[in-house]
Length: 190
Image (tube, rainbow, N blue to C red):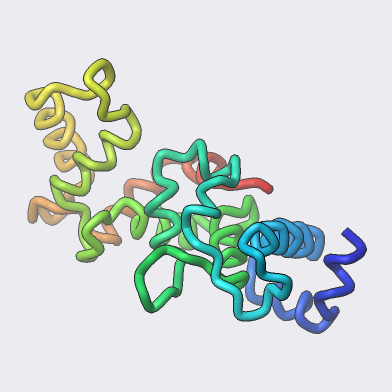
């Protein structure tokens, strides 16, 4: 880890600490992991490097997550929309999934991840994709059409306070606030 810390100034580490929910050690570990991914991309310098989404999806922490593609899309600032990430994108992702991140931060990013069409609301289509990601969409795990409709109806009945057929961000936060396990389960640890 000595070489990683020598490549990042104390001032930059302090700035990242102020801007994220990460500790100095977590930032240095993130830098080390990012640098390893950059080397696999034949990039020697991590400054201004964007690592392709496919490379991030090889990280064990993301590989096992059913929302891995959406996570990369949501945290990527790539103008091409390809899900590639800079080091700061990577830090933002780790910060939001950190145990220290607030409920508001975690629910904000969870909502964006679950909003598959990025229209600012969780529609029936978003909810169906969410359920399929959680249960699997293979024949032996996929819900039947009637089971899916019933489950979505139940979710909307519980969550759609204004009864407009979708779950907006405020409604989502309300549901999450009643789920004490959400904060502890919404994390990625490197």
